Image (cartoon, rainbow, N blue to C red):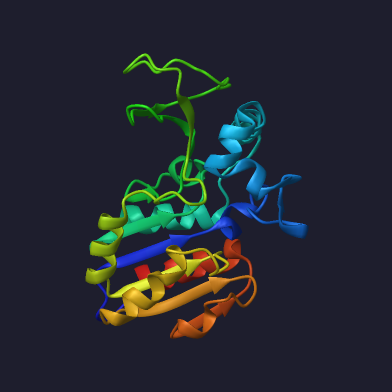
Length: 232
């Protein structure tokens, strides 16, 4: 692709939905039958830790029953074959990008297969259930929680993301609603620094008007076609 060396890709729930993972806000604003406010805020964790921990235990266990789809595999191919810089930033907390083979990536909203100590900040890989009052291996506090960025908390690696957006020649948003900040503002940052911008989404998003180009359809079809175009 002429004039393109550095690429930033943002992925959202629409990418993993084709693997069978529920989108963050389903019908009625519910996530897997729960109000987001009841399972994804610091207040929810303080009010009902058993509910919050069990919710993420179930989401973590469900990962064993899903597989990366064609969009995940195509982005892993881009990561492996693109000679310039690539950063895949995902809002998703599943591990499907990694299982497809992507390496140049980060999870801005945390990961289901990670634990966070709210006392000392230790983060480490985690499989299986995580009961409330689990002991932190680093500091001994009974403060281990799911390593998920709750509403009202700062997403991870924002400095890294901002630097990548400032250097990007192309910014691509895939399967996102364009409604949740700060991710919804990435297209504006990329455009400010001179990047071309492309949206790939099933439907028009709240941020579609910011993009130079929008392509409508399933990520599993459009993303492999776009990656093949770029690598050609």
